[in-house]
Amino acid sequence: MHAIIGSDEGRVKEEALRLHRELTGGNDDGFTHETIDGTADNSEGAFQICRSVVEALNTLPLFGGEKVVWLKSATFLIDDVTGRSERTLSGVEALKECLDAGLAEGVTFLLSATGIDKRRAFWKFLEKSAEVRSYDKIDTSREGWEEEVARLVQGRAKDLGLRFEDEALELFVMQAGEATRQIGSELEKLDLFLGPERRTITLADVRAMVPMSRAGIVFEIGKALQTGDAARAIELIDRLLTSGESAIGLMRASIIPTVRNLFMARVVADMGVRGGSYSAFSGALDRLPALKKAWLPQKKSGGVNAYPLFLMQGAAGAFSQDSLRGLMESALKADKALVTTGLDHRLVLHRFVAEMSAAVERRRA
Image 1 (cartoon, rainbow, N blue to C red):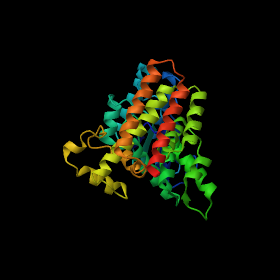
Image 2 (cartoon, rainbow, N blue to C red; image 1 turned 30 degrees about the horizontal axis):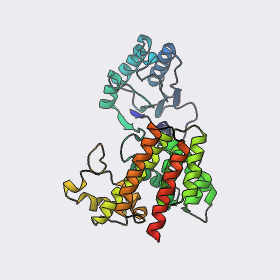
Image 3 (cartoon, one colour; image 1 turned 45 degrees about the horizontal axis):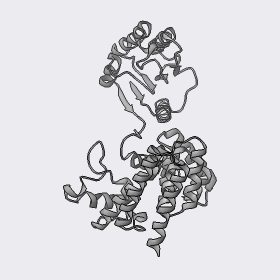
């Protein structure tokens, strides 16, 4: 018995299909193996699906040999109206009893589902009796999610023989998000776009081929601010404001985090924390005394969230600690102006962009 579950729909479908081909040897003629669609519109549909699976498990292959029964993309195992109904529960219980009684020699059961109620007896039975693989989406509300997605993207890119420039990877992560299906689709587009001769993905490639999401625009605003590219930052800010984005939300999602992370990166750099690779940088950060890193952003799982500071290393060199401290004060004033005054929001944001760009230019001079 095999169960492939998780909230990452693309990954679940991909892994289930891969395992099914492995179990069947890629030879499914429609007679030996059975695939049963697990999409249920209501409780009666769920009951009939379970009944069909039980019948399939109890029916030996027409020509003998091994048989795989795949309950594909089951939708009725979650805690919703259909999943809680007595009719559904009785069908799932009948399936559990069939599996618990033992399958005939050569019969294999495969379940794939993007959701399952882990409080129910069926899940507890699967945990104990089946080989379970779980693929959940990366939680983008947690600190450090970008690092997890970046590792996933790099692994997928390597399978295609691709590699990212650092800035291109940063933007791709923000544009494509955490869903593996979207990541896979965008990487395939880039693979075709580059062709067999060129295998390195540049920032220009990502900008050309990957659709600009809100998160991507927010990220690009931050990059423009870091480099003092006022024209680009203002263009992107105006694009979001025109589309109905809140100026306060933009200030707190992009501008304030950018300035804060630059300041933190500059402070730790002045402490001697540097590294050409992420592992070297995070290792140097971990070696700091506890009091010197307690104020830095922390992961929920514990430890410093080093990834955003690592990304800011190069840009932080364009500022001094004093100028960044002044910019944090300016960001605070701008935020207060957006909340408490009737000043034009576009003007407030533009003024801050000009001030930050001037700080970069002064440092360069």
